[in-house]
Length: 212
Image (cartoon, rainbow, N blue to C red; front, top):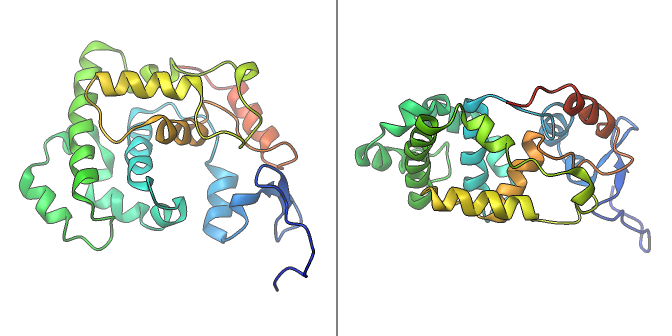
């Protein structure tokens, strides 16, 4: 049922009541898949290289699109890119790019597909220099006190710094806004709005998380 005329809409950065009667971040209440992603994944800290690499790739595909579009295709992306195993993705060739451009299960954007392969190769270079991709990513975790109020910003000083470092290392399609979305999703910050029922759960998970 639509809103009654004159009924105020909640601000994008305010909690809104979901179908189960609990308050959530506004963006999550549109569909069951978004709600499940919000409740079980978004903002919970992640420390594995494969999962972090996957998210960097999927966020680059999201650029200019909605996360719901990418989320609906996530399993197809995983199949197409060998579960985002860095070593296997790094070995993909131009023939694989041509094949992936014919795959209706993913977003068929040549530049973004090529960027995933390039970024896997850059990740391999990084792993030769550092202990893990996770250690690299978490080194950019910002102090919470310096962050804007939840979901009121699309970049941060930390996302700008990380984006610049990735670009310096040759990574592609990972600007400050994309990196900020990565930080939100992977738990480098807790950007659940105040009043969201999941915010305190994420905060506890972050407190108990062993940084790489």
